[in-house]
Image 1 (cartoon, chains in turn cyan, blue):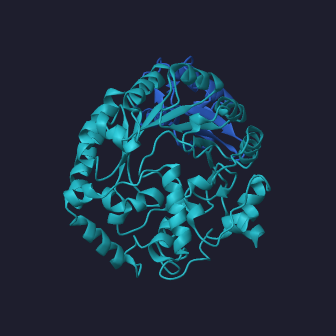
Image 2 (image 1 turned 90 degrees about the vertical axis):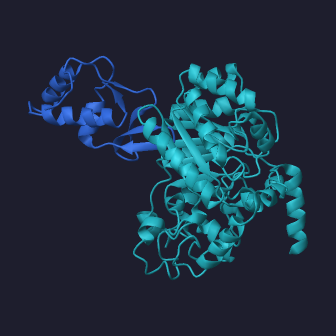
Image 3 (image 1 turned 180 degrees about the horizontal axis):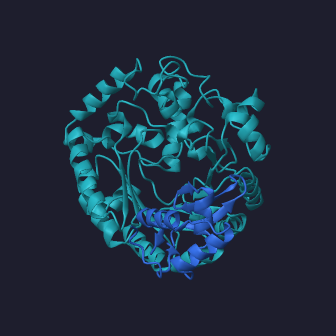
Length: 383
Length: 90
């Protein structure tokens, strides 16, 4: 069966190398799993070099060095050099913390193609509060260094209730820093951001205003800068084509070597994700049970199974389906054909009427090892 | 009518990398977090976009490579599209 599936499945064009979950920042919407404290044994340099070679042989072209904070790894330059030699287009996805002008240059020399820097806000105090560390001025300096050294630069700002009203200032900051691309990334509610949902989900009025401003700048900046703005999918009626389909083009390797069809997939129960320490990337991609579990369309229950749109959205996101329904095979509740859609709408409606004071009063759970351990203890107790 | 000056020298923008992909059996353009698969003819044209050859030189070379075929209009249309897409300066 794996053989026939491998014939119709695509190649892992996109390799996301999560080098570490160590991070100097503590953003409360982090897309890392809640159990980051469990990850002790990181892959070593040799393992990563082998993963890079094997994935490239299968056709991987885009490579993201991510984390946590990938700059924490002292072997980053070695990995970048090998990536360049193999013909990857390599992207460094970083907070900017742990970088200095010399390291930007060393990475350039090693063959890094592009750097994406995150900002938490355009306001220094808010940026530093959300990241849990005084990083704003350093980020600005690093963004300037990245541009000065000739890299294409993406600036990524995760957008949520606490910073969405400053979206115009945020865009102006990215223009001033001469970003080539700007990702105004609405928070997706998994992991840490799901824990902080009540404090982070924007209201419809906030979204409408932000969207209008983003569109205005998209038109105005058309020839100089590409601005990507996506509304949070909780407000949509059709789900996102998550990962372009399970096991279709994306391959994530977590810091401990586990291979995942998306970076949030480790939250799904009942799936054993193969580890690159024990399996080749080829075996993992084509033959493992986990990568074949939601590949294609045969796994789908109704209403997806008979839906003509399944080839467009692949039933939405498996992690979201599990998070909101307790069933990873369910139709993503963002879809208004899902029997769980009404419950999601009701929840969004409830949060819509949460006053600013109430939302602001919700203490944010910051992403750090201490909170990860606390959450793990809580979930162990509730089991 | 194309509005491309045939003596101008097209160049790939620094954001892009153009390369042959054995696994895809085609040329591709890679850029931050994205890629474009190129048709055979697009690959043949972009192969010659190097910041040194003029549009005229490039068309001449392609004509020689493809048995003297009349391909001026197609090449100019592609270059215009590539400029519109922000891939090249011209």
